[in-house]
Image (cartoon, rainbow, N blue to C red):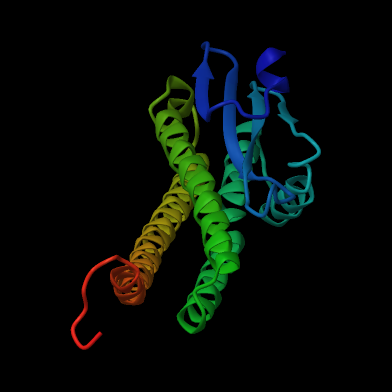
Length: 232
């Protein structure tokens, strides 16, 4: 019960010989502080039934799973689980595509004007991709772990093929998230360097002006002394 209530539980698989317990990550329905986060979904599977546990932030995935299951005609609890895993892995793709579009738009904005708002937006984008990247990597590990459990040995050929499809989709989502995060990290480093260059240029100009401003002070101070001056 404690695992079911924990929405931040890490992705994993547990099998006791009869029951299969699966924790998998899915993108949260709403953004938090301007960036995407992920939540966990739990599956409890036995030979007769599949129990799926969702929260407010993850129940949006249920209609998508139901639609896909009806189209594919799931014939067993394991097939239903594998189809659900495929839908969950695929749910990352639209968000990653959207974030890539935001990255391109943000890059154009920052090229025109590197301002504070643009840097904050870049930071939100980077944080969101960190969450998505970590979640998709955990999903890949969990599904890979599932593939070697004794429960899968009892599956038929169609079920094993569906599990393989879910694994490939999860791996693709992980690769896309990692690549997007790497590009955003490079962008962040580049714009940080540009800001540092601009700051150094500003400090150089201010230093030159401060040196120039000392000249009148030196001259006026010299004439203010009680000394003999030429032609005086």
